[in-house]
Image (cartoon, rainbow, N blue to C red; front, side, top):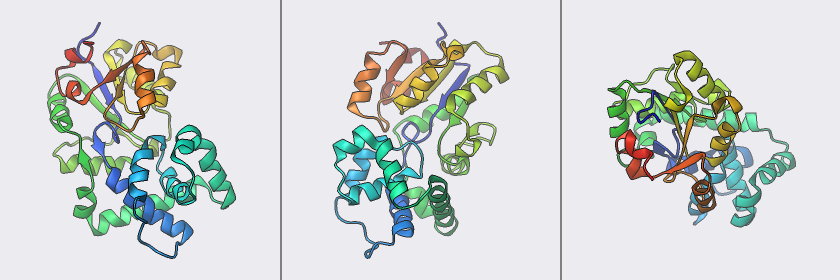
Length: 262
């Protein structure tokens, strides 16, 4: 059993960076551009509801849809259980499509970054100890990759702010338009390394389960970041899954050999 990964692949949002405040702000701004509410100040309590339900979001376009769902009074429990059908119903009802919303959201972000980079960066928090771990990893033989559903340029900008310089070849953002398991497969082929030396940390259980379903990736080590955007039920499910290991933030910051210790 390899105690040190040859490739460490990390999700970004919910593993490296906590962008909840920025998410809500950009989601609200996009919501205003799509639905034109009479008041452009979000109602009290809406942000807190959004933060609690962040685990249901898979890609950015869903964020303003979540705002819409909450303002329509759809119960949090219902959203947790049946988010996919809820977001599809909202798209259909208002004759919207995900791509258009995604373009609006990314354009808003780009304009925000161009006009107020400092303000945008200030709404992101890096989880305790994670940046130190990344900096330490870069100095070793382990190859570090980021695989994210966030646009790669945003990931690069945020890491640059923290003194971490990763090139476009090390960051796979939303623009690559490929499932994360395909990217892991490509990295294994590129570096010609044994699967068990490839470690993948993600905060979405569904994403890890998709990797698990790939017959040719059965030895890749999978970790669910318990500090990220996942639910108590997902953590419990992971604890009962021999294939996926639940990883704590404190353990993430330790030597790799400690990650495998129960």
